[in-house]
Length: 70
Image (cartoon, rainbow, N blue to C red; front, side):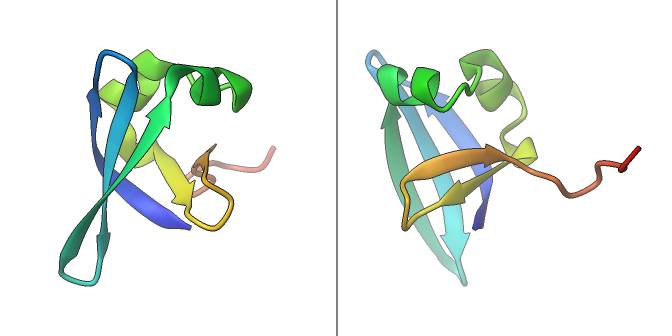
């Protein structure tokens, strides 16, 4: 999974930026896809660093890094 460092809301979804080495890459997710994954768009836009992208599955996950296990 790759770290998301930037996200931009469009008319039909969200465009995400992530790095592969020094190369900037972009991936697009529509609003229905985000709803299906239970990703809140305002959270993704305001805190993209809290999310990871799985390119093989074309899915977004909330990062587990920094979360304590209770």
